[in-house]
Image 1 (cartoon, rainbow, N blue to C red):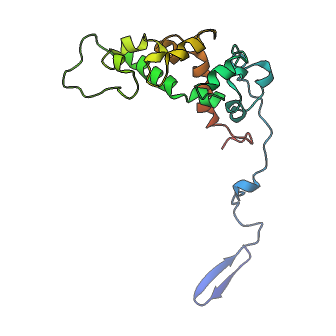
Image 2: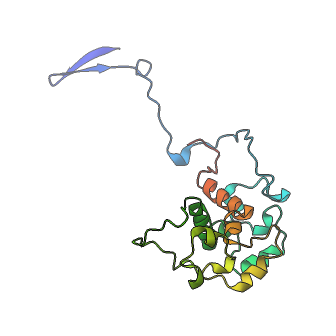
Length: 196
């Protein structure tokens, strides 16, 4: 402290910079220096072809499905017929989401216990022949039971290994599961490797 200076009935204490308390000054986000990349230990090597193992999650989402380990390039045109051109498309594919929901709820179902007053239905998701089935029956149905997937889809996917043949198979198809996981984790990735 240096001295007191009265001004208009008020007394001000004048401090030198050396006496002033330390107040951290936060840099605006655009001025934050890029941090060194930490030594991460996680990997997805069994899900991606070798050439893509070092990609960021954002880059992975833009890759074709054949970048997944086990899906050959011949899968890309087959999936493109179903409007799936990227890993992100496969993880967000509405038929996968429907199949997954049916399969999850099949495990909660009590045999023969549907209340006749119940109003829930899946009429916009299933072909008419499957609308009144149980979740377990829906899960065991062919992919073409999903409204919008024609019989040719069953045949088109048949030579993929492993081939999803039923709604349950699609829900548990590792390629869809991996793609969905990439999408989920991409939302939490920082391009500059910061921890904010």
